[in-house]
Image (cartoon, rainbow, N blue to C red; front, side):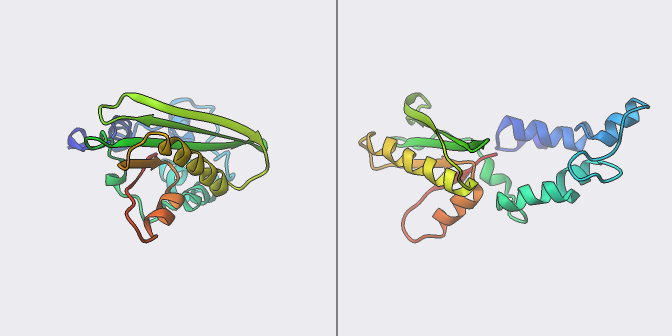
Length: 177
């Protein structure tokens, strides 16, 4: 059943490993190696089980909340489809490491070929959502140079995608992992 899902291969593999209890957690590793520590290194809980690592750990919950994924995790948001005919897909992402922000923008045509893109970084202290917004701004600049009105923007930032989706107008979005 898992292999028939219309989603990314890595999502299907993750689901299969989850179903067969093959995801590594400290509790699972300690069951194979006697002297291994079972404590969660994120929050210090006595046992890092799979459920704890994915859901119950306060740090994991904070990450899910920041990503606006709590209670809104739909498998259909992870479909990997080529853009429709005559459409350009603009995929953008951003990251923060030690007060340095980086972004990348990749543009593909309706056959999946890379037709453009850009990347950059700066030393600046910004919140994660503002960095993603900066990457979105850069992706709009790249998209405007494509000379087409049919553009699909794709981001991994669920909170930004939700904000764009909830505005009036014609927007098409896809959230990825």
